[in-house]
Image (cartoon, rainbow over the protein chains, first blue to last red):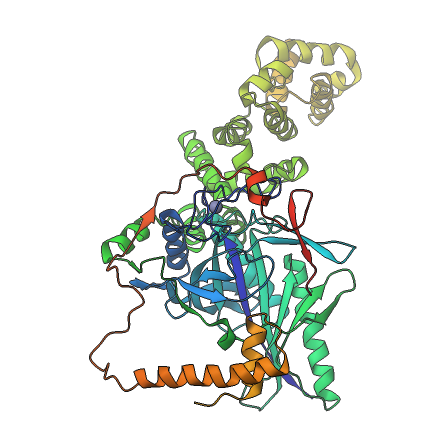
Length: 483
Length: 94
Ligand SMILES: [Zn+2]
């Protein structure tokens, strides 16, 4: 039977703040010793009073704006109640009826143009602690992560394939990093993804039963887990079985999804407004201030690169994948243009040689910015364009300059890479070639003008390729006239 | 409003309470009585009263994003019934 696939993603992203959501404990928990970033508030001890982190709210709103959401004026923090050993207060502070951001969208590129994926909501909440399962049937609990600010980004069920789900998730990661609200680091758990997936026969109007997939910790895992789960559901339906609404975990090692224990249903979470945290009433001015904080986003910058610099769509996309890369490129273009070098030449060298070198060293353009300065790109191209160095030398100069940060002109000087363009040095080489090749000289004198090509070759060889062939021929013609 | 035994069992599970058959029956009556009292509140006309979860009239109580010292770990773990490697030790739950 033919089936339609429906996927929605719930992405949890750590908001990049110094301190936790409701207390002053450090939110830098990735490599901290267990239970060293905790206090009475994030431990849920009686009498502790939570205070909301202003920056976390601002950054979550900034995220909503980058995702084309509407920012809601009235915000309520709610308690989501359930018992679990990683949840010290037995409730998680989250948002229920009144999320901070609603009704947004992101555009993702696909084979047939861009597709707009709807976003239901972005809300703020606190993370839970971490359980370390032990072989002896116990768990060790570390509460460092408890209270770390998160935003949950919920998509509409608009995704139709595992590949599209992965590309949407990658787009989110790019945007979150671009605006600086999240590190995008999935190994450290700063960015996590759950999926809801259902299949239904073509022609059936209502969605199939929704299965939630958890524990997908990489882009590849998202794609593989969804591919597996869709096949599982199709096979079950083909066999006449019914799919139950359930939660399954992705087992990376075995490459299967496994049904998980039933947690409480949504009505059992007994959401109610957190009495310790007064509501947030966000003014139009406050929202306008967030809007003003929003940088130019990748899609707009890519379009501008195409329009202003004449880049191809592919180059523009590659150069705007990362914000620091795009900024490096623009600085390189500005410096290059001042030397009469065009943006497209800069793009060729950045996407070619420079990305080859940074791939090798594992650096980003932001990392190398202070060593291999953006202006150096145009300087190398200018040295090549004005004939000071050959194309082969240009690559050598570029790489040497990249490695140790010396200015390109300095590398050319230190390594003696300047083309021998004329003057005494070239005249000397020409005289030498004439003296060593009497037969060619005789041929030339007897009217076989092409014989000079051999002599040019000898001068080039003697100059180790550093002579300019036209200049070498001119010097030879001059010297031959004297013979 | 009369609760069923199943409903009492469900609520007991959410509260992580293990109840005997006698206790279930006793609580079935007691909880039902309490709900009857709550039902009396329904008689009050609140059509002109806005729902409220706050009585302080405060809004936008926020703090700057600044790190403050956390507790020493000995204090964090002082009341832990069981601990290992600087962490609370609990029974595993799947
Ligand atoms: Zn704390």
